[in-house]
Figure 1: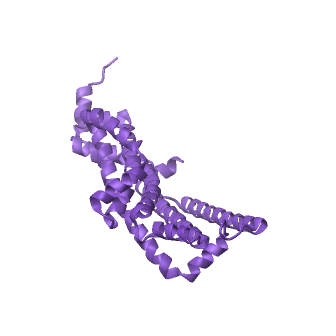
Figure 2 (figure 1 turned 45 degrees about the vertical axis):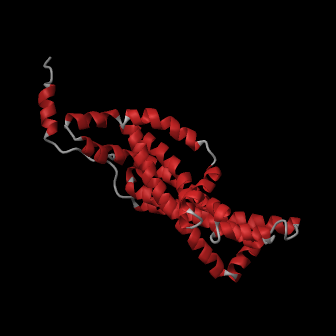
Figure 3 (figure 1 turned 90 degrees about the vertical axis):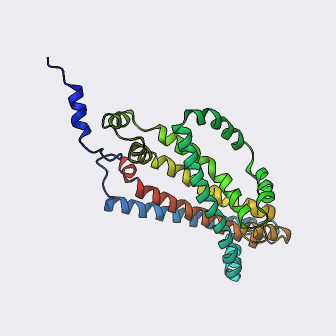
Length: 285
């Protein structure tokens, strides 16, 4: 039986360009996928509306005093009564959360890639990162305030600290999950390290990175509020603190609803971006 000439096969494949890292059968989302997305969105809206209805019914049945608990109608009435007040503070919290998320994403992806490509960095940094991650982020907030003051920067850095770690872990895991066959193909084609990283490693890591980003975006909103709790004079965290001091539950629950809406909207925006950048993941489901 004739033995195939592996060297000549390697030379032949070296002349061919690297195939795209995503599965070749992945195509643009079909109309069926769009319909499924709309159906899923409708179910999500129905679930949220049902939760509000159940909440209001429970309040009307139990009839607690207003200083203990209020229903969603009271919270929405408060939003309608002072739209400018809530809009101004929402914009402040949104800015802080997005800045922290952007910074946390950049640093998290960079750190995760460093841990993957450098065994030395992985040996020294990974245990240190795990140790830092165990520290409650609320405990770090006063430190950021000492470093950056009481302004916008300190809240953004608190949000960054909370959003950072899911991106590190998910980026590292995503880069480590590249199939061995593709790595071998890149070696046979004599692809440079940079070309392999850009066209194979990070393309396959996109779904994992965006899974971490969906966690981080919600955490970033919470991190901004934590910073406002400690040293805020505006933002939804400050609204909650002020309402608490005045036993103003409608304002407090209105801020809770706005925070939930922000986090949910940003979550779906990140999820949509991930689906667009990794369409083969949708087809695999």
